[in-house]
Length: 67
Image (cartoon, rainbow, N blue to C red; front, side, top):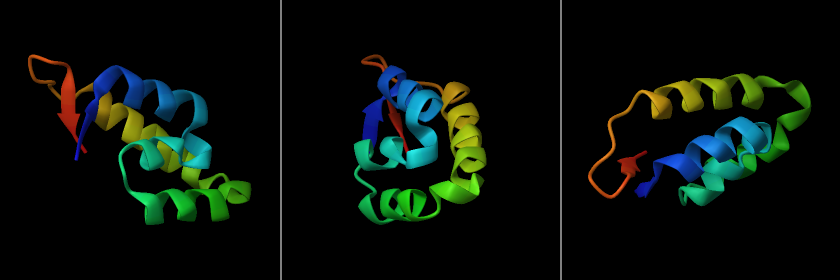
């Protein structure tokens, strides 16, 4: 699935612990797992990793990345 890099990075940074960036990317099951385990702070750490991988991923000419 391709998503806008800026929006995806923003969602990772601001609401990543709740999995909002996964819902935006169309990965509903992963998003629900993030919500289910948000009280453990593990999804927050994984969202930080998602943020870093998306930040260093090269976007195409329209600003889209594949996640």
